[in-house]
Image 1 (cartoon, rainbow, N blue to C red):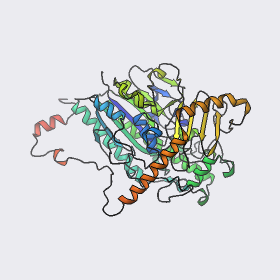
Image 2: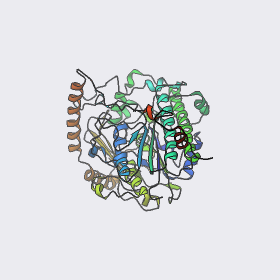
Image 3: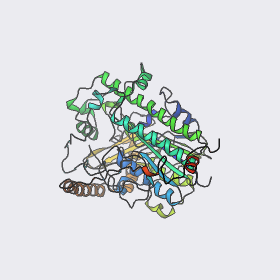
Image 4: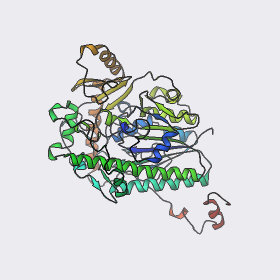
Length: 501
């Protein structure tokens, strides 16, 4: 195929350490396990930012948050930023999104020709943090640990409503592609699970009765034993209002694992339609960021630690030999990789792109450039930048002490080596590389200016008439099923797949 079909399966807040080489064998995820067998499995993939909107904008553009301006969950994703959907659509692809991408601003398509569902989160500036008010909690939208104490079982929830629809619409679209068959397609299916709240259907909950992984490997640390950024995360999560017991932790983790099994079923249904309609496609599986899941007492994301910043990434494509790749890579690499797989030239935007195609790395070439993670949203008071290169992981922030971890010797990141004189050389090398990539003072100034503009605009737009940017999916009812301006015989033939069997 000159332009192969592409199916992107994206999930929300999936901890990449659960995918050391595909899904961990104790997870009940048979469809993802089968996908892993035929995929290149990037075992050490990092998000560009451990938060939904900035991580997703970077995945789509191949640019870091400091370049996109999508710093947090209420920062506008500018309409002039080219995404993989623009690149592929320009090359003749039909581009479609079913599900979440957390676009903020009036452009709710960003290169997608069609969008099948609305988003689960608001598209306006209402969730804007404010660096001028450090420590401020906005109760109506900040995370809190009620997601942990309230974990359990339910047959339907707000999020299950959403993901059930995402999967259904995606399957219907695959049937449409089979019946139409005129253009190559790229379908992005983006679920909101296993994102908290940690509530799962009983049938999936029961898979994890007696599971050996219901407690974190690193027990909760005392508040004063955490680094300053982790303390700010605790404060943002209103930790003093909740007493988290071991049973709460077990129920939250159990529901999270159960929701992975729910997603596995949905992904199996989608892949089943692909197979039944005899369509071939590249399949990509990834998450936007991870979840700490109670490790060291931390929950959700917002942290540079592995549970929050590591994500799964699997790519099944013709010409790629399945297997495990241990070189650190980034979700920033997905846009150039997708274009490379589709035969789309990105030379026009090469100077704007922070990622690189993963095809050479998949074939065994070394990864020379460091992987970068940026964070400038809630629970921060100024931006953080994290670099991963080889065994070393380094975090720099104007408000906090430096961090340096040797992930080969200390995968749980328990020993900060930044003050160790014997590690002065790798510290200096990582710091120098970080300073080349990111000017923290300028980053901070840009974030503050963006926040101030958005807070003013949001306040103004909420007064008087209000016209939200939330995407409104339109279904052309007069073009569906049987209508009097359509020829019945022609309609029945065109809407059947396969025809004549």
